[in-house]
Structure formats: C-alpha cells, structure tokens
Amino acid sequence: MLQTQFGGDAEFVRRLCETFVSTTAETLNELRGAAAAEDRSRLRSLAHAIKGGAYSVNAQRVATLAARIESGSTSMPASQLNQAVEALNLAFDEVIKHISAELG
Amino acid sequence: MTVRPRLLLVEDEPTQQMIMERLLSRAGYDVETAGNGEAALEKIKTGRYELVLTDWEMPGMDGATLCRLVRDAKLPSIYILLLTSHSAVSHAVEGLRAGANDFIRKPADEAELLARLDVGSRVVLLEKSLRDANAEIEKLSITDPLLGIYNRRYLHTGLREEIARARRYGRPLAIAIADLDHFKEINDRYGHQSGDVVLQHFASLARSLLRQPVDWMARYGGEEFVIVLPETDAHGATVVAEKIRKACFETPVVLPSGPVLVTASFGVTALDTCAGSDAEGALLQEADRAMYTSKRSGRNQVTCRLPASVVHS
Image (tube, rainbow over all chains, first blue to last red; front, side):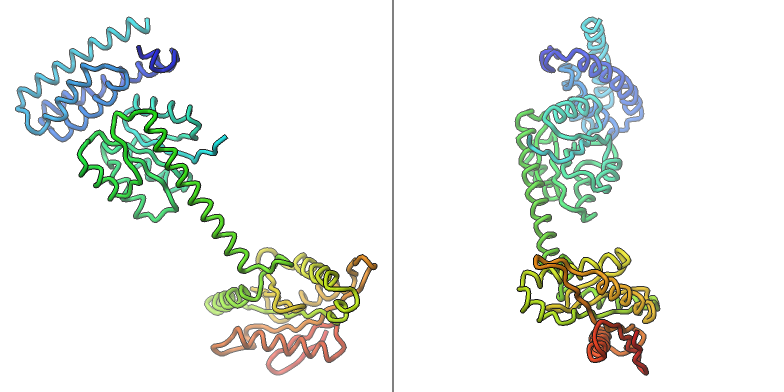
C-alpha cells in the first residue's frame, strides 16, 4: 500500500519504514520514561511525534493510540496512561512484524 | 520552467520530513531541511531562503515562536507557511499573528500544500521583482544616463558623506574639478552627438585612472566633472589630476570626421583648507576657483588652490 502511495518507489519506502522503526523505538522508550516520571508535558510532545511518524507509514492503530495519549496527557489518570502506553507498545510491535514481512 | 524560490523545510519528525522533502523536491523546489526551530532560525538568518514551510509542534522552539523570531530579526521578505494539527480557528489566528503568511492543517493534502506554496512563490517573486525595480530606479536616479557615472544629485550626498567620514577619522580628502576646454566649439563644429562621444571619452579615461572603488567621479554640469579622492591630500590629488590631464592631452578622441584632441582644465583643493560648517560648498567653490585659474592661465593645466597660495603645474 505504501508502495502505491509513493509511486512504486521501493527504495524510498524501505528507507521510510526503517526510519519510522528506529525513530519510534527510541521515542517509545522515552515515552515510557516520561510516563513513569509522570512528566505529562514531555509525554504529550513524545506522543505527538509518534503520531506523526505513524501517519507517515499508515500505521493507523499506532497513530490512534498515540493521539489518545497526546490528548489525554493532562487529564488521564496515571494508571490509564500506563495502559495506553503499553497498548501503544504492542501496536508498534505489530507494525514492526508487518514491516519486516513486507520488506523481507 | 517556473523558477522556484529556495525553500527551508522545518520538521522534527524524521519520516514526515522525508515525505515532505520528497514531495517538494519532485515539485521542483530547491529544498533544505532543519530538524528543529533553533537550527531553522540559524539557517534562515543566513538569508538563503525565501520560503519556509514549518511544523508548529516541535520540541524546543515551536513553529509560531520561529515565525515571531524571524519577523523580529527584520530579515528581507520571507514567506512562511505554518503546518498545524490543531483545527481551532483561534490557533490559525495565533499563527498568523505570530508572523506566518499562511497556514495549512495536518495531515496536509498534497495538492493543497503545493498550491499554497505556489501562492507563496508568486508573492516571493513579486516582492523580489519590486525590490529589484526599486534598486534599479535608485541606481538610475543617481547615475548620469550618458556617461554611467554619478550625477550631480549623488555628488552632494556622496560628498557630504565623504566629508563626514574624513572629519570623523581625521583623514585627508581632496577633490578635483575638471572642465573640458573649448567644449562649446566642439559641439558647434562637430555636432552634439560628437560632443557626447567626447564626454564619454573623457569620463572613461578619467575613471580608468582612479583607484577603484575608493575614488569616484560625478558629472557636475554640461562638460564639468568632480573627482572625489578620499584618503588623498592636496598634493596627491594634484598628481591624480595631472595624470588625467596628461592622458587626455595624449589620447585624441576618434570622431567620425577623424581624431580630435581635447584638453581639460583642472582645479584641485583639499578638505583641510576648507574649515567651517558648509565644507561641501567651500570645497566645490575652492576647486572651481582653482579650475578657473587654470582656464585663465591658458587651459590644459592643473591648479591646486590652498588657503594661502595658488600652485600651477
């Protein structure tokens, strides 16, 4: 699907997916740290970044979960935030599997 | 092909930056990227970019702050398109008030984004052509159209500035007035077009013997010129004037009817001989008097007029 979006430019899609995976893995780590420290401003900013990256590669579930964390960063109770972060983590793992299968 | 302005893309999220950069490059933009507001501001301050496409939400300096700082820096016209994921009208207003020229909501539709950038490109190119036209008008307003040297209008401004600089730093300044000898006879005998050729010949010859771009000359009147020589005393100016006089005397002007020898009379003076508030008027008056002394003494010569003496060469 991404290949279609980018006119069959397989090399670009590969670089894009690799960039998404490495960047998001790093940002997710920071997100977990921010959630543990209840640094809500940082949490919002990191979730926003993950959301943007997820939209780039059509990872809709990751984008939705990141958006939920971003919008709930100031109001959600800590336990709910931690759950949302875990759900985001799992969704990201799924995307990695999907990307690996697609790119080979 | 349409000329696209140079564009700076400011986006902290790497994949979005990749996608946007690809899209813009394919649309013909010369794109450079910055990963945050601070880096973007540094790049924008170099003056290399005319279009900026920036994300609003970035860690550290956000897009709206970047807009404000760019406007505060009073840089020449830069068109800023702000990308924002917020949908509230108040947010758009805040962005525009911060200094953005336009905004577009994320995720941006590619066709809309390119159309809005096209609008920005048109504005940038129009402003640039306006600036160029103004610069050309400014240049024309201080240039003699026939000779390509400064005109009398600039002479007064430029000479005042040179006097102020010389006085501030205690440096010498001299001027020479040159008047072509028997110019009316040349016009009467060979016609005004030939007269123009003679004027061009003299201006070109004199300019070639001046230190560029320190010394400069202006057309003072019909066949009268003022040569301004910063960092030069009366003696140095006399040497320069003598060099031009000699070259003029030794280089005939080639007219359609054949070569014609044209000479010029010079009057030289220097700033330290002209104390007082109207130093510009005094300098021109002294040089003019010296030039008329040259005329009265037989033309084709240089006279330097100092407060207590008149020296011919």
